[in-house]
Image 1: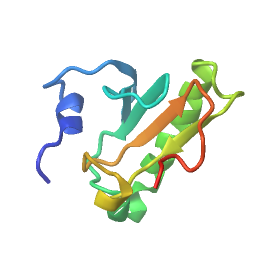
Image 2: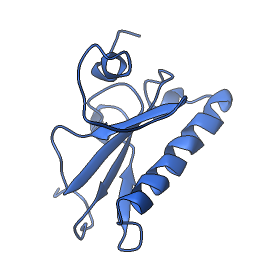
Image 3: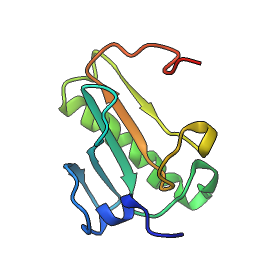
Length: 116
């Protein structure tokens, strides 16, 4: 797997506005926010897409959602609500092929999220 922009952020080769880090993951502000709060939560392990998740990755993928909930609480948006999104492949809207959870909050989020 070629180094993605997210791998370069993990390796500190390029800057990001990091809001959380632990041994398993990193969370940072999206450079093209779609809501007042738009964070990306990524595993430090390189996993290209949802399709590439293996049984051994279950704990780290669960940890991404634990961190999303933790950050939503810390940012004061957990009670009002927020959205977590994982896009998969081209038609799913994935642009960077390193698994990531979008945490969107800070305004009412409509459904469907995109116009047809």
